[in-house]
Image (cartoon, rainbow, N blue to C red):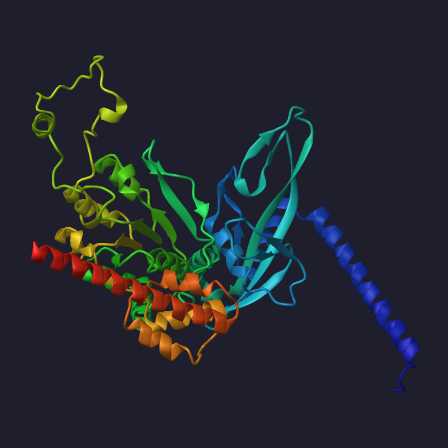
Length: 500
């Protein structure tokens, strides 16, 4: 049989396709007229079920809000939004970008009808962002806050956006997605938020016995720029990193996930700078507590309970901020003290019949036993992943109960300037790793003690390296001469007393 020309063959194919389409339409029309709707619906549902059963794909819908009214934010949706922001690629054409003042970086996530492919433990999944506009009469939803507003004209149409994610994957991985992948996303999103948040400083509101609204702590100090003995710095960094990773260890040991540090040494040795470096390294907020502003053990209890995890509680100058006693003074003690001081019996009333506010002694003060019970007792189990930092210029004045393990786990002596600390300062201020004058400065450090703050003050006087270092050497010599003069004066005073 001879073959048909190409044009005739194409015409024949098109004619056959048209006839088939017309027959299909005719059959559908007859079926709709002759077959009852219930039977038609049954067959359609059955065919849909068969196709769904034969399909290997499974889809999960994650909506932005939960519940019928849509007022409760879906935690999994928020977590997916944060997580997917780290998975964007050049293939994604449409993104949503925003930033909050308490975030370090831009928040990025995919927008409507965009897709992202992710792989988790060799399981391939496809995320699709869905966004659609819906209308309602008289009220609307205020986006991410889940708030509803009413309009005066109830007939006015309000358009709102409904957002969701579709997650598609092979149905044989359903259990792994539900039991492993989703928990992983929740944990990973939490970690991303923690990494992106800024460090804040909280202080005590003495009038209301609560924490004030936090302020952003934009302190530039880090362990890379901290002028501190290099070996001590390395030991502290290792201890902090072990603490952060130690949740399972503390749970296994039956101990509260908390770590206490004592920073002690003269003023100007960098205790406050070290605290800032710790906060920046861990990305923990600082809760600065002045115990003189805490009226009682009960107030202290409420403040500690209000502290979240991933926080640093700082109590500076713990040796002098408050006179911690094992028990509060009672009325009889005050009477005895008044009579011993004035020679007159104790009178609770002033000359005008009233006692002024300044004359009233607090009936309840923070006591040593109460303080220790709150940070080491059962209350300490109500929070975790917290760090306690105490500072003092005079370690020898602290009560031994404060120094015991469980309260203080690591003591850090912030000594006078060492050569390693000086080299860090020289790098910070002058950009110097080494210099011929370093050897002379190291020798002078063995003759006189100076603080890092004093050295930093000298280095700031000139940007010229030679001039600045010569200034440091002159500062050392002046201090040596001053110490020698003081020693000679003291020795002369002693000889004078011996001759009397």
